[in-house]
Length: 356
Ligand SMILES: Cc1ncc(COP(=O)(O)OP(=O)(O)O)c(N)n1
Ligand SMILES: Cc1nc(C(=O)O)sc1CCOP(=O)(O)O
Ligand SMILES: [Mg+2]
Image 1 (cartoon, protein in one colour):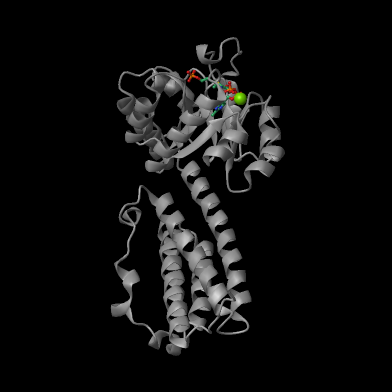
Image 2: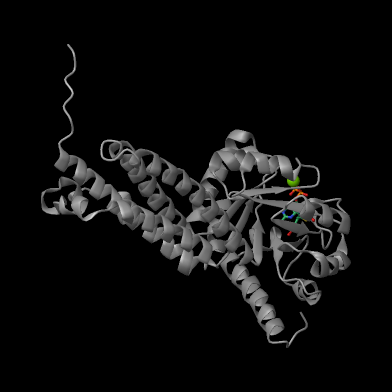
């Protein structure tokens, strides 16, 4: 039987357009507030505002006059997930999704309303996809900039409990490093750790494995000197994810920065059983990083509470550790101790009590 098509009644069309214009404007406003107050990014906030204003031009009095909230069954419908957000990332993601869906509705139904509306809203939807990528990248760089302590994990039964304890102590940067498990296990662990870190608004990176980073939607990867080139990792990961590179000499550092590393590891400061057989690069190399690194960098290798002051005396302001936290009896307290000391040194330097 041939299907009978009837033209969409004008009041229905107008209500659909009104509701979705509202939805996009509200969602963009929520995103804009984070760009402005959370990220301090005038540029991103301005882009949201500009989009909102363009959308407002289509939101005419005529369309608004068809609003009938009391008879709209949709106002009662909420998903339990809307009542709960585990962190800012989830909140932003939910609102981007809402805006993109509403823009798609406007694109399709708009074609029945005005000859230009479909193409205009299609363009806007792509603009919002780009905005989402840029905002995510900005967000990740901001957390990285504000991270002074980096936990590189080691495998063990208490892995999740230790990472969570450290996150409770204020840790904001975690790397999953696991040299021996099979890929099925690695994938499961990485998924769980990623969710855990994101619940605390911390960054989650994966050692060595670009594929796993994509699979679990991690914030980035850490690559050693023997791993794939940064440029190739960037092609796979896109511009919005972070790439870290280990460096052991001034030449490594120069190359990693030139190749576009978002941060670098500087070490091993001391010989360490975590990387047995690797010679120490020493405090001299840390001092070189103080003077020459133009990207955030983390001193790594054998750092603990006993030698922490010596490392900081070079002018270093960020450290990465494995055993100091993974083997600690009280990982929350150790994390808090490291963070408070790192903060204290920065404060003393900014008040010129210590040389910077
Ligand atoms: C922050 C940080 N710095 C250095 C390393 C070491 O990476 P790599 O040289 O690739 O050695 P492995 O960790 O893969 O054994 C790191 N993981 N993190
Ligand atoms: C994983 C790693 N990379 C290093 C480097 O110098 O690139 S040193 C290191 C091990 C750090 O472990 P711990 O804090 O237990 O000494
Ligand atoms: Mg590696």
